[in-house]
Image (cartoon, rainbow, N blue to C red; front, side, top):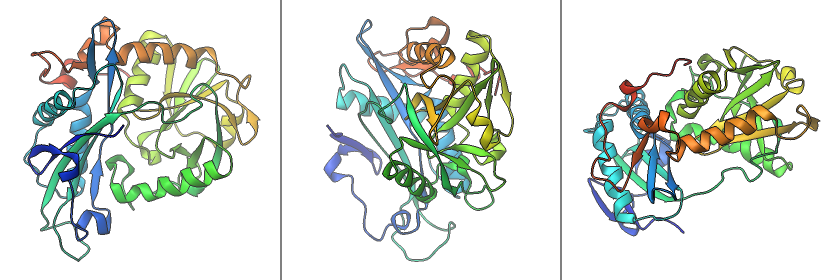
Length: 324
């Protein structure tokens, strides 16, 4: 089931009214940026919880800075819009994926970023798993390289950049895999087609650094904190060679869309035992309790939709991750 409404041109409208011209600059040149936010249903509290929305909206607005967008929004005002949108949709008993999108809305021909009008839109829809085999995904190394920061910054979630992800994902799936790992221009692991990557080796969780042309993932930061503070693992941020993956004890993807997905095979080689390992299993259990508002230590990351006090201020300032 798709969405019924969208925030578009300054108000919430029926989704069929949220349309742009074929002349829209972002459609022709990829000059937009998006976010991905999830909201999770909590049966015990009969409520929907948005996970770390202010952090997501800060990243969207930072993407706008990269694209020279002058937008009259703050993370807090975007959250207010999202709460109104979700209450209008009135999703009950299901998890929801939210797509905020900023874009060059000018209807002109000409490649540039300056002197162009920009706009913000957002919609939400029920959403389950991004990768079907969450506890045992089969992965291949892609022949495509990750875009470089000096070409198109991966940290910006820029719409045009996701053609790179589309090449990577389609080739992997048509070859019979669930997902792909991508190398950067230096030959080190960057991330998946649209997910951050971790491996576990000798009790240490290892993830590529932000200068490996990765998305500065909010779920990545969340996972780094949970691994260190809740599970007691050392978290190491460094470059990872391709062959190190083959001898890892465990490996996984993480991201808002993908959540936490175990990697159990890479290019026909088993990772560890070839089944989901104890670290990833525990992490998945912990993560889903946190995002559903069931872990009181992390309630400040959860914004309830159906309460009057649902818009806390300064979410990120209330809690700083110790590991990234």
